[in-house]
Image (spheres, helix red, strand yellow):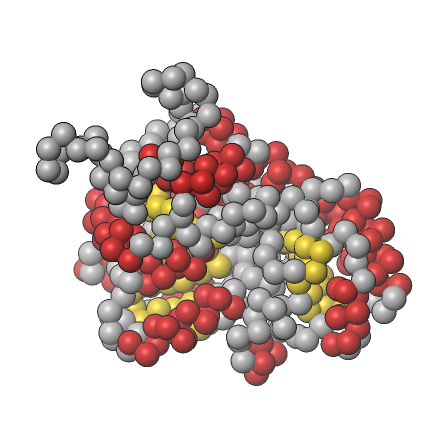
Length: 401
């Protein structure tokens, strides 16, 4: 089903509320109906109104997919039951002998699916420091089929210059002779489409864990893929759409409906996440018990200028390294009152995680230490509570270390 969406008519906050949420033609309802039907009446075999079985397509899911495509300035959107479900679908485009160049500082779940699920099929994954685009350029060869990037990365908040990657001469040359491959894939979960639009910077595919900022209320697990608008990517979309249906990692209509509801306040939430995170990062950067603060909005961040250039905000994610021991990090994280100790991120409430034992526990310690992900590193998802209360909570937690 074609999902052409006019993304230039309105600005972001308007698109977030209205694309996919047009008034229902039959009732006039201004909220997208929740369509729970698993199957659809057909006038004759193969003659239907665009839907036949809800794994293949569902009106509520289609509304969400149109909305997501519009927010990322893409043409095609696909929704999944989780972020890893979306990642798995993209990886289905690969075949034995293909090579993927990836950021060396990736979400642990991404690295896990690469190494544990796909390497055994003869797909090669090469990890580079993607803060220097030359490291990517040096690895591009005839077997390269994907460049997989997070920017900012999870959890060290390192950036990749997406426009510079898209303009690499050897990459452009290879894409021209290989029907658009290597594909540039960007996990945009940390920034959301509100603060960063990788497709406008040259990426081919954007993936999201919609569980995080897009839904924003810690009550739905979901994922998404968005593709940009060109003829070659239309063929990629058709292949991904086939995999979505054939493999079946699709979200329920209710999860799609909840995600659409969350998206309506995405612009407002992201602005507050950003304001709070900036205040918290500045506070932490002057604290004697904190060794390092990673936040693109700080002038001390080594890629602060790049952040200002390719993002319209700095987001709500911070990572810090305490000046202490593993036990100190655990004690601090366990004694906070407003920052809940838990997995995930991007909800309205603040969360804190210990990557070494939580989100990145599956990453070998040797690699974690090599890239700077130490045992005292903590990841903060700064919510939209009052920033002064959040800083007081951090202060009382640090007092116990």
